[in-house]
Structures are given as structure tokens and as C-alpha cells.
Image (tube, rainbow, N blue to C red; front, top):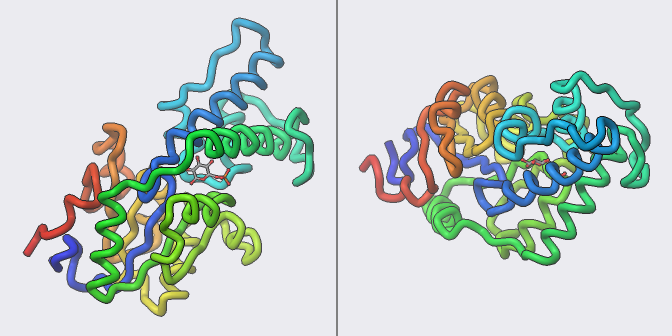
Length: 247
Ligand SMILES: O=P(O)(O)OC[C@H]1O[C@@H](O)[C@H](O)[C@@H](O)[C@@H]1O
């Protein structure tokens, strides 16, 4: 192990954003709950079964691109909506409309609450860079760049593969490994020389299937066992735990 708490073969680090670098996973979960509950209430009446911002979020939405989150959660309730168009209004009962509703709610929350980076993640990324390792942010979010700027972290990554870049390059999102593989490639590293840092189960699955050199699960919500079941080699509750370890 190196002093970064990673195997010696690791040359580049691929960081998920929401919940790993910034405290925005809970903001996404709250926006999804508001959007889905509004939809379910309209469709099923006052006795609707609400979206569970922990269990439903982790299993069906967390880590996936926006439209995939809509589709996978609705499928879990036996609901299928028409795809709709990118610019569908937020009240449209389509996959894109519901995604746009969630995005409007998410942006509103970010505007009022601001974006906080995890201090331990900032320290870890800085230490990794100082040690000469390459860094990438690999996020399903189309808002990744704005979130990084708001968190004051934009300059800390050599490569950014986010929800927008994935669409431009035709890359399937997490749980597929393609966005992580693309980031490793852009950093000039084989997957075996890359470490993946993720908090979402879909992200773990991407890390496991991509043949990466290490998969670090970041457990902010008490799901360490699930992270291990989905492929984490190491689980920490904060990236700062990796500093100075294993030497
Ligand atoms: O809606 P956005 O900002 O494009 O984000 C898509 C997804 O990005 C992921 O990083 C989050 O874990 C999900 O909760 C979110 O739904």
C-alpha cells in the first residue's frame, strides 16, 4: 500500500462527485422525493406510497444518470411513462418532464443552501495530487461542473467525465463502467492503475465490472455492508481516513 492508503499499482484516482466530494447526495435525494411524491400523489391520490429518500434512493436512483433514475424507480412501482423530450415542461408526465421537475427543485435547493465540499475529501484530493497521481471527477450529474465551481474544487481535476460529457460521447452511465473507463483512458492509465471512489451502489457496480486497481466505498449513511457486497475493496466513512494509512 502507498501512503494514500491505496495499492502501489494505482497511478490515477477517479472520484464520484455527489456524496464523495460534496455534500450534495442528500440534496439530490430530497429533490427526487419532492418530484416523485408530487407525481405519485397526482396519479394515485392521497394514499399513495411515498418515495423513500433512503431505501428507494439508494436502490433505484443514486449514482445513475437523471433519466435512468426516473425510469428505474418508476419501473420498481410498475409504472411506465412516455420518454418525452429534453425540453418538456416540469409538469409533463413524461420521463424527461419528471427529470426536469427534479432538476428545477435540485437547482433551487442548491441556490438557497449553497454547496459544501467534504473537508476530508479536499485534503485527500490535494494530497493525491501532491503525490503526483492524476485525478478525475466521474459523475452522472449534468450539474457536475457548476457544483464543483460552487464548492471551489473545479481546478483540482485533470479530467471531468460528467452527465453532459457522457451524452456527448455516447457513454452509458453507471452502473456501466464506461464513464470511469473513459476517465482512466483520458488520464493515460490502464483500468488496473486506477482507483475508483464511490458512495452509490450503482457506482460500486461500475467500479467492480470495470476491472479497476482498487474500489473505495465511501459510507456516509451506514451502508458499509451493501458497499462491500457491491464490490468495495476498502470502505471508509471519510477520505481523510486513507491519509497516512498503510505505510
Ligand atoms: O440530475 P443531475 O444533476 O444530472 O444528476 C443525476 C444524478 O447524479 C448522481 O451523481 C446522483 O447520485 C443522483 O442522485 C442524480 O440523480
